[in-house]
Length: 189
Image (cartoon, rainbow, N blue to C red; front, side, top):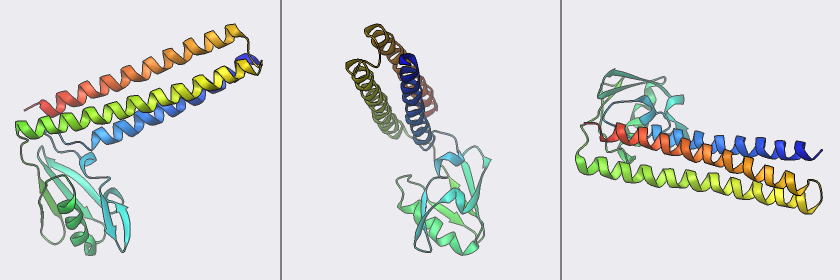
């Protein structure tokens, strides 16, 4: 019985840590690098008939050139709403429209802007590390409670703590790896 509780607890912790990594990955994809990527704008919230809607649900987004994004709305009546959402976002981009398609030209990033993006990215990495550590803390408390309630032995407690720490280390390393790759992308001229 004792090992099943710990296995379930570790499985739950791993699942929650994967969620933190997925959230971080989504956020990092939205941080601009020197190249155009649909991920930069696909989650942009557009006010559409009074409802905030992700841009990817309203239009097809393509990359015809390395520094250009093309947005083709499914409903041409939403062009003004999409343009407004892009202008008021913190992306610093100016949309050009021909009435059917919106073109976004991404200007090259200057050194100062690159440093700001890296700083923002490091803040996001720290939030992800904190999320993983909070999951570890909660799971660790649960393992201790199991031992206090005599559901597991002291040896099970030690093994569970070691496994939980290995899991935590694995995800913290994954966060660092994602950060290094993204920083390289941002700083690439």
